[in-house]
Image (cartoon, rainbow, N blue to C red):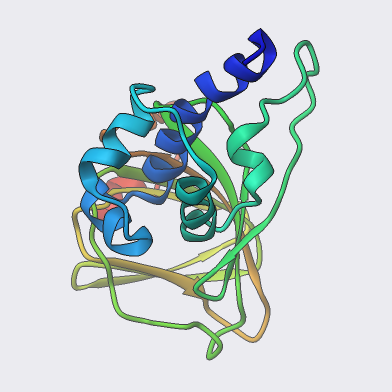
Length: 202
């Protein structure tokens, strides 16, 4: 195997780890989705196992990305981000970062109210911050409910039951930062300004 092919395979593990953490799921959940064992998934992410096509195909399907995204690194020296929307559970998710680990950035488009696949609050490890780019958002956090308009933001611990969706008949577009390990967006205000919504939702 040539050096270029080896370099491509060497980068698969970090991309697989970034995709899984970006979705906020465990190896166990991914194993159930793909039929691969947690041990195999862990070895693939750590680069201790050379991936095969039979392993990469179910992983690409589970993560909702083209196979090329798993095996082809972006061109060296090319600063452009090649955005590829992923449609999952009625949402359109556009990853804005490609590096493994740390805080991940996404643009998320929520369908109009009434078209959401589910309105059941969910929980998972991590910390999330979102900013409403366009539309109106209904945000449920625990036993509280908030309505946010374009220009407003919120941050919260994702271990608290939560649900986000459009509040009206138009789609809602959000910029989302998610840290699977609980990284928090540090926001501050200048004297005289209202505190960020994050202070209200905790």
